[in-house]
Amino acid sequence: MRNLFREKLDRGEPTVATRIWSTNPFITETIGTSGNFDYVEFAAEYAPFSQIDLENICRAAELYNMATLIKVDFQNRGYVAQKAMASGFQAILFVDHETPEQVEESIRLTMPATPDCGGRYGYPMRRFIGGQSHVPPITHAQRVKQVVRCFMIEKVSAMEHLEEICSIPGVDMVQFGSGDWGMNQGFNRTDRPEECRAAEQKMIECALRHGVRPRCEITSPEGAEYYKQLGVKDFCLNDEMSALRRFWFQEGKRLRELALG
Image (cartoon, rainbow, N blue to C red; front, side, top):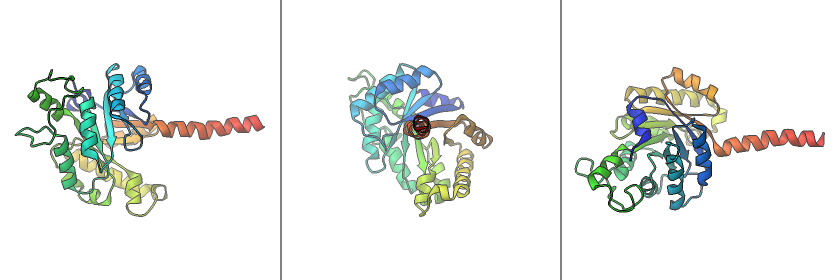
């Protein structure tokens, strides 16, 4: 019934997350047992999943008072975001937006269909409501409004319209995507790291001016200090697949060298 993510933002508190690809709820439970994370991000943009998986991720997170965020593809974002919210996800991370109009449409698709909001999200009899109409429609609408809406800034056009995007009511967070931003201009981010960092800093400064929370991904806790100095409070630590890949490639190589030694 409570949006733990929204409560953190409303109190101005920092948030810490990590990102998973696995739909196995045991992974989410294991993260929860650490007691170190406010929410878990499910990378639906990258991974295969079913609607039942979405519900199970939410159930597992709720056991440990963790919130949940889902990263959705652009093309079917309205459908997936609505189904994720109906499953219990408390935050949506939208990708690949280019214009303020696209951002406004995504907010409209995930806002309640009430006179004050003018959204497109109705009153589905899903887990978010309680299976049946246990939550009155207007109470449900209030909960829908509390969902945290985050937008990736990862296209050249989005950077050009950054001030407008950060001014749109309903934009709660923004996050810079250096890989897509570089690709959108025809280069790899590893080839121009300083240019990427400067663009990210521009996004952070703009977001803070507009009262929008900038969210940053880091690969180690030490990476947070740089962003803290810029005023960032929201961090996502590493990525399940990246961490496993790093372990398999680095530690696996060391073991093979020892074994063949």
